[in-house]
Structures are given as C-alpha cells and as structure tokens.
Image (cartoon, rainbow, N blue to C red; front, side, top):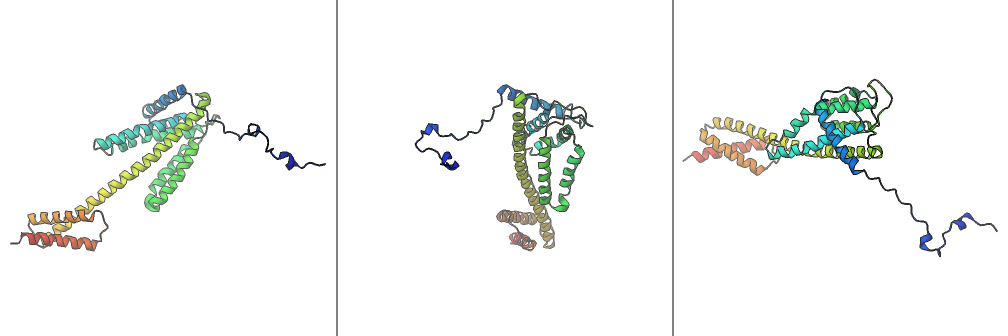
Length: 284
C-alpha cells in the first residue's frame, strides 16, 4: 500500500508538546565590548580634534569609515551644547558661526573618505553646492528634494569599505579593522548617531530660521508703517507728539492683528485712522 507524502508529514496530535518542533529563534546581536566602545569614543573625538587642527586643510589622502563617522558624531555632540549656550547667553548665532568655522575641515574629511574608496571628491561634493545655489531658480522645495537625494547617495558612499587597491589617492588604509569583530558594529553605531543628530539639527535650524524670518518681516513691516505714518502725518500737518501718538496707535493695531495677513488697502486704512485719531486727540 502506498503512503502519501502528506500522511507522513502530518504532525501526531498525541505527541508531547516538548517533542514538537520549536520555532527557530533569531540570533542575538553581538554586544560591543565595553573596552572597545570606550576606546572608540576616544578615537572619535581624537579624529575630530585632529581634523580641526593638523588636518584642517587636508583634502588629500584617505580617511577610513571609522575616522569619518567618528568625526561627524563628535561634531554633532559639540554643536548641540553650543546651540543651547547661545540661546541662554542671548547669542543665537554662536553654534552657526562655529559651523561655518568648521565647514572646511568637514568638507576635507568627506573628501578623504571618498578618496578612500577611490572616488573623485569633486565629482560628488561640488554638485551639492550647485543644487543649494540653484534654489533661487528652481524653488526651495525642488532644491531640498534634490539635496535629500544627493545626501542619501553620499551616505551610501561614505559607508563603503576601504578600497584596498592602491590608486591615485595613495596607499590604502587598514580598512578600519582595529577593533576586530566589534569594528563594523561601532561604525554602524557612530553612523546612526551622526545621522540622528543631523536630523535633529535640521529640525532645530528650520524652526530657528523660520522664527528669524518672521521677526525680520515684522520689523520690515513696522519700518514701512513708521515711514507711511510720517508721510501721512506731514500731509495732515501733525506735530511730533501727534506723530508719536499715531505710531503708538498703529503698534496697538499690529498687536491686535497678531501676525494675520492684511492687504495693503486695509493697512493704509488703519494708518489713516491712526493719523486721524492722533490729530483729533490734540484738538481742544
């Protein structure tokens, strides 16, 4: 009598539960040794300090994955305290001045990282500056989308292993292999932290620049209103005190509007009312 395959594969319902096939477990991720992680943090800040000093203008040569992502992580961890110190000390541009001061060494370590995979840095870094500069012509959103795609491409390139073939950029590095089995997990940890810090930086900077833009627009509006009140006041033959009164009246109107969109016609009407109110208040 023939036995069908499906009959053989049927699980015996009377079999003990312990004998049933257990579901395969996912292998646990290996933990990084504390001594290696501690040493890697020291290396990250060492790469950063050397990048800001002896390698400030060093665009030649190579940089391993560990050097690049360690530099970027340390840069983010230094930037955030400066951001909050600047807010506390009423110096909101402190962190951004520091960013400008470290822009050259940041570009230099990025160039060396591209050299480490035998890529011409100029072919990958210059397009980013061109895209950013084209925002005026193609629109900020289109430029932002292109920059995002460009950044994703760079992240993939920065994450490649060292090209061990000796090329135009000199002898290859040791391929980051200084922590043994912990080397790749450490690089991934630094990369994840650096990208997270960069994302938070984008959010904070976007919020900050939006606030500055609104403040600048409000200041420009107040300046324009002041000039229009002076013009309308002179035509109405108001005294200096009456002009000040009209300006105070208009400031009160602006507070009531609280950033609402107002047409030029409505604004002119409000200025006329403020001037009339100032002139009427001075009459006996």
